Length: 119
Image 1 (cartoon, one colour):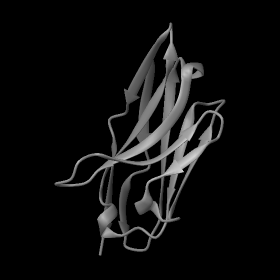
Image 2 (tube, one colour; image 1 turned 135 degrees about the vertical axis):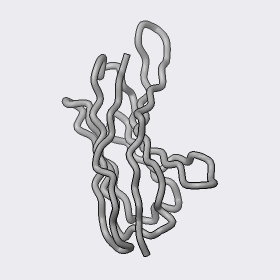
Image 3 (cartoon, one colour; image 1 turned 30 degrees about the vertical axis):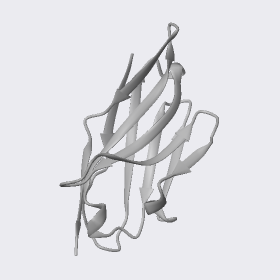
């Protein structure tokens, strides 16, 4: 079992930056990839970025070079550096982990951290 806890959300002015953190606990050795998703008001949840335990990274098109995902494998932590934030980035950001344990795949979600961007 893997548990996830996000932190780092808050209020920032447009053009500002935030760094989100996600700490994993439990069987972190079983994690294959970690991602950030977001849920904006009135929109469906969407994937922001993914990083694998091997270091492969994939970003959603809307990131456009503004966000950077990174991982500390040893500590089971993942980070999202967000720069040049706009009001369109407002929402709740969730940490997600997927992996294999005991011959079965799993997906875990954190409870989310809220990001508010004022214009």
